[in-house]
Image (cartoon, rainbow, N blue to C red; front, top):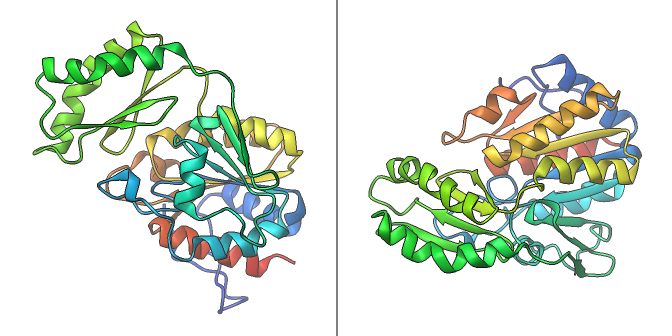
Length: 288
């Protein structure tokens, strides 16, 4: 794990060197034929710093310019997030940006899609279990003694219980995992753990499914995926699956001290959203 060895061929825009051979092969493929490359990016913790109130999360100040420099050179750029796509578009500042005309945002783990061409969202009907869980959740948290310091984020097609404001955030997180799993199961939902957050959402959608569908729909011949949290592990597995099919891939971790699983799996670890933005800029600079 690490990123500190750089490509010295262009000192103005150094490229980190992946620590795995598969990652180096993926990077080489991205640079050799950028017009056939798909770029997949998580939003919170990857393009945007994690903040106590998710409503206040905003993309890194240089994220949009980095994406606008890179997007015209590759086959596709997709932001894949658990948020509603409209929220990610707003918080990212992605709408109406020259260079991002073909950006897509796959929200709710791919259940909803926003594309810059039409500036519209397409989505199927919501899972009925979300509405029933929504009605039960406040009283449920109170009944298990977890109301103080926790709060519910409304995500439309999902619900998230945050413990970051609790007196002991990690202890509150661990105490809620099993009870919330039971509540979710009663309503036909699953629980997705994250960075001091437990999300109740419908089964059958995750970032791996969304990434695979997108890469195959675009006919991409190489792929990069960058994420920071446990919910990004299915996307990592999707890149592994694509590699097994002969499509080179690069796994990037937006590093943090809160989640180590991704760093252990990644080909390349960068220093949070600022490091992701620097990598995107360097890729754009090195692409013909």
